[in-house]
Length: 633
Ligand code: GAL
Image (cartoon, rainbow, N blue to C red; front, side):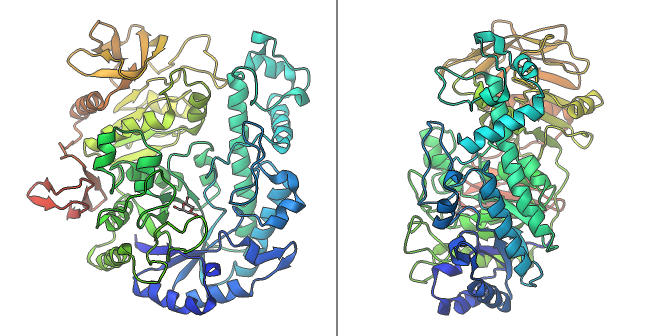
């Protein structure tokens, strides 16, 4: 696979007489792609129905003439002010019932049919104009679904849409009342139009009511994306892309991805470390200028699967960002390391965000490849270095990983709605499992919850799945490796109730979660032979073999040869021990990696990345801080 670099560019932010030089400088920096357009609606259509394309025609022509390939974004994340006058009820409403105002971005409600039609219209107009343009080689639809918490809206449009969705799903209120257990507090409904959105209730709304609203809201993102995808696809063969975010679980990315050709994501390792990830103060200080050593890898692996093998980084942090609580600069070398790491995980393209730092508006403190005065910022030379290194590196393909982790968005909603313990969250649990696999030096595939074939894997982890899909259960029935499922896997029905025969329902394994407890920070369940569970512990019953016990003799892992159930949330050292034991049993090679060093295998090479702030040893090789090393396998 041929690797390429790119950059995000906003011609509308700059005088036109800079465009040609910018384009030439991008090419000189070794860049192939330039993404434009995604926030420029007010320049394309300053008044409803008055379209102005000439500036965009010229921008595309200039960039294309310089030899760049354009990713053209639909501008639907930034509806202009006139749109809000035209559709005053298109603004989203937060859970407190407050309307979210115009004056930044993403001020639209996915349920608003008038706005959905406006979005389809602008996408179609752009596709009609640029669908056959030879310089436009890919399309981005909208920008970062759910950014700024925008998947859920408690508007009238959402309420009407939700009631209709419920009527279609349940057909009768009697069926809905039964499914939700509405008898519990006399919550039964007689008609669908009595059903409110699940906010502003006196105490928590019924869990299946909330889960239904999460499913409905995800479906609106999928439908919203699809109307644009269909409109563009009718005019072009170029691939369609969306730029997903890190640690966003509010909509089903597997389903949005099914309507697109490539999954891309926006990688801000340093911003995420301080803004979005758990970790001790010590860890956060150690990785302050590098980002968490597993966070980028997790999302590369996730989105490679969401894109059915095709993945990009659409926005790569180049220097300090503006939006995290604290915004340090990367260590010299990280803008190169992050790009190589993305390529090692299968990325086709990495685009830095953004070309030149804007001297105005919300993101003026956000670095680019150039400073606001057009002088090079530090990341420019690192991008150039990566581009030069492509030549020295043969094309590498994605290898078959020996281990897999199943990741499910519906389960994330289920546990948001019913955490049962303040620290229980799906991403956090899945990421804890993933990190343990990475610390063992493993290359990992992430799989959707309806995966039907596990035969390529030796070890499969499936923590926190609300239910097992029929496909996955069938795949487990014939699985010849070891699947470690749990904690909290297959213990609920689709409606987030406890099944008549209590779960999990695992093929040929007699184990039942009889009682569940969640634990506050610092409280732990000690395990025999060392180690402990944090946050969560399930009391298991059944005749299956006990593979690990707690110190006071309760089962901690139960199961048979090929499927085992993990009863708690291991701390890092315990996860390491469990994964190490399973890998030994399965003859999977593991590594004792020095702190901050991570590896990733492609089909031809082993890549070594040093996230530590100091040099680390890999065999005989010294890998400097923020260094990348690769060797042929
Ligand atoms: C992303 C977004 C970009 C820009 C960037 C700043 O979330 O897609 O438009 O805001 O963050 O880091």
